[in-house]
Image (cartoon, rainbow, N blue to C red):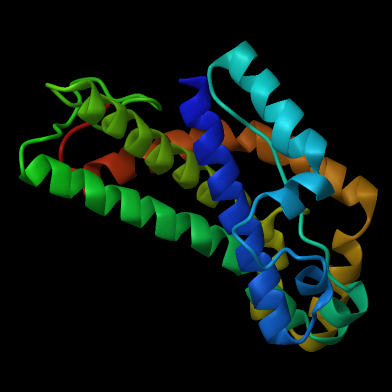
Length: 227
């Protein structure tokens, strides 16, 4: 179980950060590209944040049975202040990558159900969005797809909270005027603001994700009831 979670966590986090780096380069900031982060190779991301990509995920799984962690993508703050809307699209690229992985895993689950290899669980959980009856191979596939679906939905939802330093706050310049967007970029770089934002996000996220998760399961199984 722990290996499955870590493989999914590392791949999903790498996709998230690579999407940030790719969008930044497209927007004119080559900082992350020059650091080798426009890549699905996890090693550049681990070298940048070894504590958040290795130590914390493993400890959180041992303690809580699921994984939390982080990585980061470097960017030029002068570029972000000069082009706040380009920086906003960079911020949205990471959650968009996680949403794509949710959709892919959801499609594969639906295909598995359609051909009779997978089935909806009676009581869904973070490790059991789909179940398999039969060979160990399909049981393992059901676990892997379940973790992909849950973890990427979690990363997508959490990162879209509009609180610094999360990606949702970085996307706010899309709806702000030029001066306000530049001022917001400067504010987000303040360590105290980021710490306060993380504390608020951690306390708000549980109820938000619970509702969002139930909605996602209902959409996955065409209106099925999940309390």
